[in-house]
Image (cartoon, rainbow, N blue to C red; front, side, top):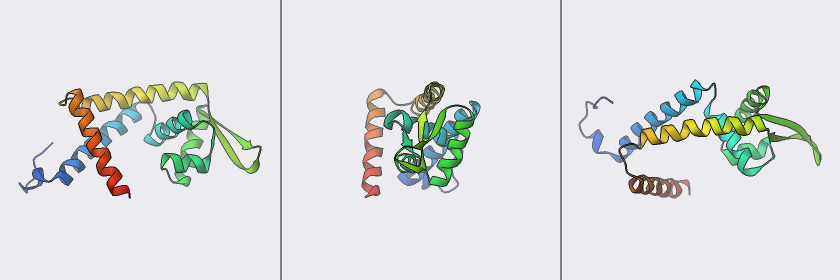
Length: 146
């Protein structure tokens, strides 16, 4: 990473967070792209694995993805056999999305990718420092999400 021309920037936590986030985001996106996937795929497959069959709207709320993006990503996942859609027996106007066995296997591949990126990004930190960093970042995020 190049040093900024303005020497005060490297002492600003917001600049450091932004630069680290950009770098980590690129690594995650590149890792997923190498497997023909996107971050939305990982988020949706992970949400389905944790929450079970869900409507598209529920998936959007739980994953934090806008509904139009949920539909597009689910179309891609369904075309590859990672999810199945079926009419909701309680409400025929909506679909229930279910994770397939192929989807579980796909999630495991993407999970390995994201884990490898975490290890790469956090390589300079020992396990205790990694846990501390995550706790501090979570605290900042929780505070600003209010």
